[in-house]
Image (cartoon, rainbow, N blue to C red; front, side):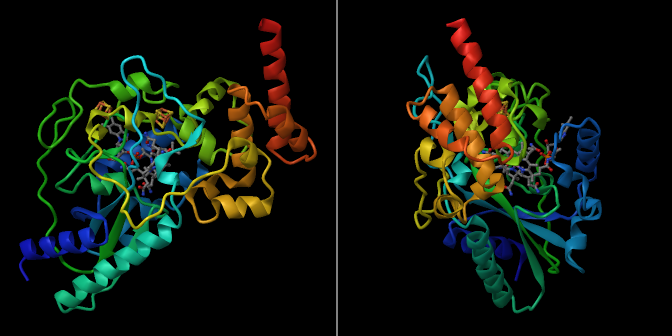
Length: 358
Ligand code: B12
Ligand code: SF4
Ligand code: SF4
């Protein structure tokens, strides 16, 4: 089968599963490893010690599958219609969950889809070549791999953006023994904007990031990123970040919502994937282990763990002066668990200072 035909087959198979096929790329990214090491050396990864581990795989993604020759890059679209307000409107509504967190069993779902794509590809080209599916959790630089495909570029918000479809998709890769022809890429100059993408002079994400986490273009400072604090961090959240939990109590989509490439959001979550409704903040702040499993089991929110979500909900209730805050605090005071106990102390101080200044 010719290489053009293989690409068409991959595209069709991906589309039949509600996925996007981005391309076929080589298993190396020397320049990005340099950026990555610099980023770690400058401690921009905050408390994410896991990024310092498994260096052998991060440096040589091919070592995750003996005999691997290339990676095939796929995207799972997840936009659900959220938009950033323009012209003086406000970002209304209760504190929310970032769009990628609103559906269940992403890893299992994606793995099953990619299994079917690869089985079918192997059948069609009559081979039993081995492959390995990487869904989110692998110790590789997924964006550095993806950006070598023919479609897409890295924006100043550090996301991998498709010039026509935006950035609301999760990345997955399949490493394969197949000797497939890799993409020939039209290089996108970062300071230009063209049909292939590029930010040009736009800096909306930098200006709109509420905490200055993107002040250096193309590099994120996780120490300042709300997504880091509300998902990855295990202790208490410094008070300077609290005001922004009125927008999101899990993750943050602001630097993507403001991006002109996402204005059209033509990508959206496949209709077969159901979006989860989450309970009000009071329920989250006071949930038992059993409630936690019922509300959030199988969703990306489990990354923050039960007490991380309770902490976030208590803070969001505090900054929005939720009418059930005292009730929630009363229940939370009955346990001594970390980081709830420390967060309660911070809340008392916060409310004391607010009363003094009123
Ligand atoms: C750690 C991590 C985080 C951290 C750090 C984010 C970050 N930008 O690195 C935190 C917790 C903050 C985070 C947040 C989010 N994340 Co995250 N995260 C990861 C993870 C596990 C590792 C990323 C990593 O290695 N970062 C280290 C930096 C240095 O590497 P990098 O971002 O790939 O760097 C690229 C560029 O910035 C560039 N670069 C780096 N330094 C420099 C310097 C210069 C001068 C230049 C020119 C370029 C350059 O080189 C790299 C690629 O070419 C990946 C999965 C994976 N294994 O890759 C998901 C991943 C990046 N996250 C993802 C998502 C969806 C999110 C959120 C949207 C979730 C949310 N709604 O809250 C936010 C987005 C925040 C943002 N603007 O990035 C997706 C992104 C998909 C996409 N379309 O890009 C990924 C790929 C997961 C996936 N499988 O889909 N995440
Ligand atoms: S996810 Fe939010 S806090 Fe983090 S860089 Fe983007 S806008 Fe800033
Ligand atoms: S908002 Fe503008 S600067 Fe930021 S990633 Fe999008 S196009 Fe690039």
